Length: 74
Image (cartoon, one colour):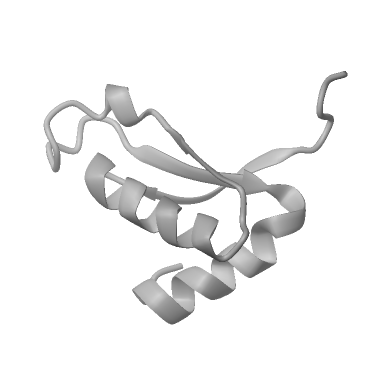
C-alpha cells in the first residue's frame, strides 16, 4: 500500500554534508526527514544545486521549531 502523506521541503542549502547532519538531528527528534538532491549538489558550496531537507507535511511545524532552536535557521 502506498503512503499518501505529502512530503514538503522545510529547508534548502548548498552543503550536502551539513544537510545530513541536520537531517540526523531531525530524525533524533522523531521527525522523518529525507534529503533530496544530495548527489546533484556538485562540489560542496559551489552553489550549482541546492540540497533539500524534506519532511512529512504533518511534521513541518515541529521541523521548523527544531531548525530555529538548534540551527538558528528558517
